Amino acid sequence: MILGLGFLILVGFFMGKLGGRLHFPKVTGYLVAGILVGPSCLNLLSPEILDASGWLNNFALALIAFGIGSQFTLHNLRRLGKGIFLIALLEALGAFVVVVLAMSLLFKQSMAVSLLFGAISAATAPAATIMVIRELKAKGIFTDTLLATVAIDDPICVILFGVVGGFAAVLSQGQAFSFFTTVLKPIGEIAAAVALGAAIGFAVVYLARKVKSEQDLQLVTLGLVLLAAGLALAWNLSNILVCMALGSVVGNYSRRRELVFRSLQGIENPLYLIFFVLSGASLKLEILARVGLLGVGYVVFRVMGKMLGAYLGASITKAPEVVRKYLGLGLVPQAGVALGLSLLVREQFPQIGQSIATVIVAATVIYELVGPVVAKYAITRSGEVGAAE
Image 1 (cartoon, rainbow, N blue to C red):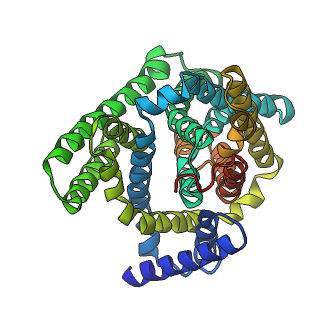
Image 2: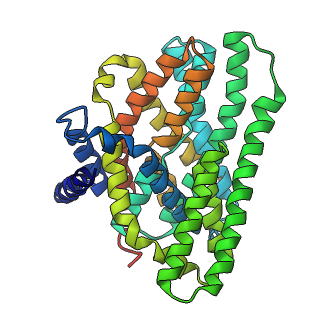
């Protein structure tokens, strides 16, 4: 296990450097490193390392979500305006509508299958986007809009999937429509996740005033973030939403907010590298051969929907031109939430769920490799690279 971690970090480091030399984001280098040493290629990682990827991924996602929450402050929301919620809603619905129409009209899928594909397409992966922003040291109206949109996207996707899942069950399985299961339950789970994250966030705010040294602050903050993530997983709540709410409370109410978030930066870099190398190792390249035109269509039309919805939302809210032109490209990455929803589909819809899950897993391989490159292009074109310095 120790030998494997050392090997994994060094391979990721050198592939990240190589990716930078070739003008790719470091995260793409990490993912390629994982593919090369993982089961799909050289198979150099031990089963123990691969088995540990589950809790390591949840650990990394907790810190990533905590960092996203730090941007979700009243100050930033006032600066971005109320329109940010409309932008996030329309980019999610844009992907949903375009994918549903493509699946039903072009690929002749049933309405239940088309609706489920559409609901999953609304999800966006924050991890790769955050890594690219950090690597480029980007800061500005485009970067802040992108971060806020990614933060709002997950709750929208969860509610949308709950509603659509209910209609899909009626269409495919003849179940009676349940307003509680379809609408109230996902909203209740989101509210519970926000409440849990906020409660632990106020604990961080209180303890941040009491501890003196930055080392103690690091331990307290890390312990409470992991506590929040662990409780979320134990209670079947969204790890990402809980930690985002935690970070938002700290960002809004702690006078030592900058020190709190800076205290975790020392452990984030190696953890994120391990997270993305293991993510690459878990990508199954052989599945790409089994998805055919349906998988290609899902990948293409989801991106089109994201770009169309983001452009429409930014235009209606009179966002700056750079946001209108490039925001949709920053929303291309898709991974964790989509994979989680695909597993739910496979469990809840045994007759149609397997084929949907196969397409989503294959699309994730493409999005994980292409998404960071496209996000880097969008952020670079925004002119905000290096502004954080």
